[in-house]
Image 1 (cartoon, chains in turn cyan, red):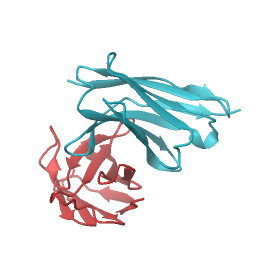
Image 2: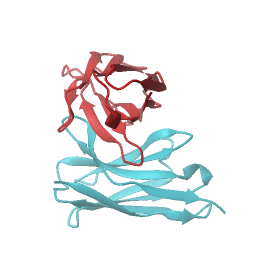
Image 3: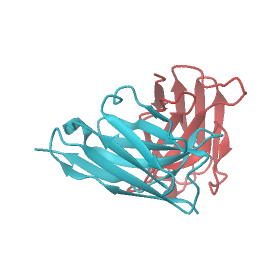
Image 4: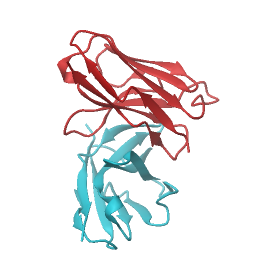
Length: 118
Length: 112
């Protein structure tokens, strides 16, 4: 059974860089899209971006200038970097797997709270 | 962007009674392949969202058959035919048609 385990985050100061990693356990990295999604009280669920096994990425236009998603197929993990964070980036961040045939997120990580505060 | 709008935002339900949630999209989610790329998720308190229904009407693995999805184009409905206490949480619709994926605001189901 595939599980996603994410780590990183915590408390950040404004202007710092957010870094999160998601490990894929019990399944293949290939054949899926791997996304980061965040949830804040003010904006609900917000898709940040995705990467596939070939390293192709796509990002939310509103975050594109600050986001980098990278993957390591040999280690079955993918990562998120978000630069120049502000208080509005405070949220619970989730990694998730998208099944390509259904274009739905069928497996989610446990979530990581990131707080941006001076 | 495809805007997803849910109603109601709050849904108090008596156990054993049915419940229905509406989701409308600003653009048609009907793909040329005949499938509607509309999905439903449930986020139980303190948990990550979980997939309930994919492509408008298909139950995900392990989802009880009291949950059903319907609709096409821009209007979709999630129905629970007999609500149970374990169904409490926030229900979200999401469009998977365009890779800038977007979610509805969420509908909070609570037990009366």
